Amino acid sequence: MKRIFLFSFFAIFGATWVYAQLTATQQLNKAEDDYEAGILIGIPDQINGRMEEFSKAEKVRAKKLLTLVYIFSDEEKKAEEALVDLLREEPEYQLDPKVDPAELFFLYSQFRTAPIFKVSFRAGANMSNPTILGEYGTYDLDEGALFVNGKTKSGLDSKEYNGLFESGSMSPTGGIQAGWWTEVMAEKHVGKGVELGGGLQVRNSKYFAEQFSTSSQKVEWTNKQLMFRVPIQVKYTYNYMNRNKSILPYALLGLSYDYLMSATVDASSDIGIGATVTGMDIKGIDDRQVNVHNMSYYVGLGAKYRVKTHFLNVELRYDMSPFNYINGDNRNNNQTSTFELGYVEPDLRMNVLSLSLGFTYSVHNPVKLK
Image 1 (cartoon, rainbow, N blue to C red):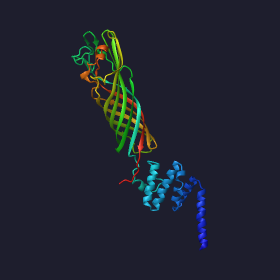
Image 2 (image 1 turned 30 degrees about the vertical axis):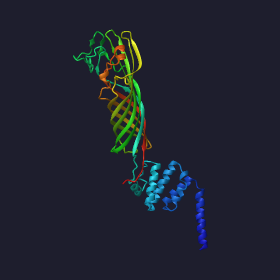
Image 3 (image 1 turned 30 degrees about the horizontal axis):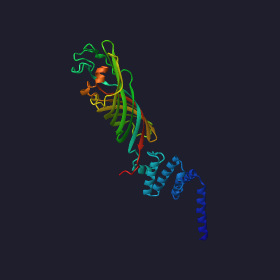
Image 4 (image 1 turned 180 degrees about the horizontal axis):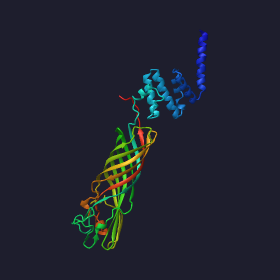
């Protein structure tokens, strides 16, 4: 009996000493070999004591091995805990039907592995393309719009009034007027590749216009806007659930509340004695010439490039506002623009084409599904 006891003691001591001499990687390999041989007892002790020594890839192997060991040891609670630990180490971990047993697939199917939501950060450049609705004259204050959609009331392309201006020559697209924008957006997958999102955006934009007189004199101005926007959107991503796809194209449709934080004008005129202004505030004056509150809707196309469970993305978007950006009630009340520079802001809708680059971070919380 003493011999058996001594033999067992030295066998256990020897095995412990051997394990202590193994590197963490060797110990993990040994534990996997024991599992394949059907020797499950002792594997958790071999692995848990060395977990902090493993590389990330080795931790994934170790936590998967623990899950399998607990499954086949009929320790259901520990198997669930080990699987959650695996999914926290490697969110959206994918099983291999050629290698992994059905019991692991069954347990895996009971847990949420998809992200609970995503947070996107993007920034880019934009170009304004306003739609001119109506043009107004400087001195015909009571006549109303001289041009509506580029035509006079009688259908002509140009009109001379008071011998001063021929207003059919207004150009709202005088060169590319580039701005910038940045946005943060939270997105929630609601099924079949469809995501609902809401976020916050800051957009800097500007447009240029010019007007010629009958004597080839002209006035030109650049209107600059800084807007705080609250967009909401619906997005469809093709192959959303296919985790083997690296590039995922998508399309989106959205609506935004737009708050005008600031609006300024740089203008010059060679009419009469000529005049130039820089940074003229048209929002903060008592008789503001722009509408502070507005709405817009947008469409977009983009593509996401998978980086593990996160994404890099590129997106092209076009914003359109159905409402007038200019406050028509006060259009003639700015003495500097109306009488010194010789122009009146036209009625217009703000349209903006934008391109952005971004990063989408996936937020995971693996839990057992009810």
